[in-house]
Length: 429
Image (cartoon, rainbow, N blue to C red; front, side, top):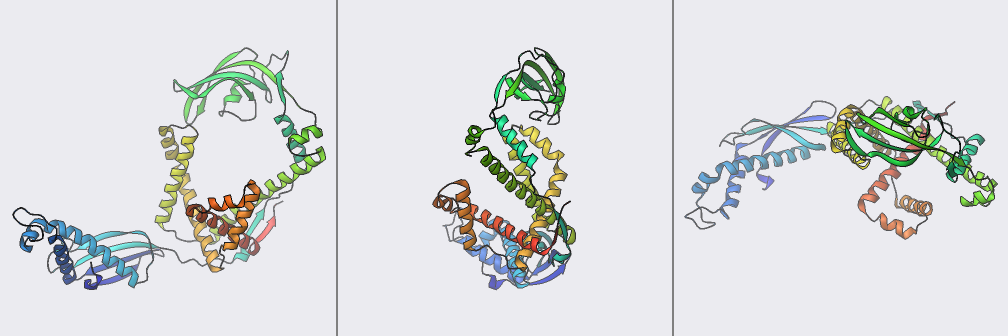
């Protein structure tokens, strides 16, 4: 349909900082022109008994198809007039408009069609003075004791598990035991709660909440029954303790160090310390980023479009559902979990939307962009970290979605680097 025949009046009202209400009134002559044009198109293909295709007289055609044509024309007139109205009024809408017909919806000849289109737009954001924002960065220091404990964990990972001869019980926190157990949920057997001759380090929190607490005090050969809460349901367990075990740790020497790609114990300590320092620095930075986002949101009160909020909430719902199903949850359990955590997910979605809007505005205001050179550096870093060929990395990022996600991440990191320089960062005591 040619927009040149479309004549309408439009009144724009600001209902809020992010909502625009357009009252659009389309002239009767434009509506009639749309109807006539629709019938001209229909006449070329319409089939009515007694007439050859393309030869049906307009009066006959209108008698058979007037209702259908008016329905199509209503949609086209609304869409075309709305599209022109937002263009002429320089409105950049978010999502689809809410349309409400006020008069003339029946497209009666000589009557104007008036409707209201309510749309959301991006909020105008004026970022608060960054120099007044204060955040604390947690320490990333690694103590000698931390390194020592990490090396002890490496020794345990290489430990030989052997029967603890003469040990009968009772079972206490820290013991290593061999168990057989089976669980039911509300009387029905559940394969995910079943294990035969499994090793369990009591107190390590390796299994269902409440399980380890209920087996404390057991003796070798004993069978015990108890009930715990699992995924919001009663889970009944029957557990048999077969044997107490012990860990024979290997000696800390160069031979052990070489199992972890270090030539000597001294080199192993340096390697472990370096890895722990890198991990501590990543954790400290992530914590700083979270605190910075919270401080930004607190300092910048903005109204957010419901379209963005609904879209992000739906994304979190799908993301959580997929993760829970992969963990073995049934569809019913997933639905119950999502219903129970709906308010928490909405709160997370709102925080994520606010953060994205603010970070995007800061990046725009300060011309923070991801250049091709940034991508090339990241490709090289990934290739080195993953020990793969650079060409293989580049091939992976030939995918548009993968490249877009990488650009988004790099832009976010650039923005955070910029913010850390601008806000007041203190070291947490």
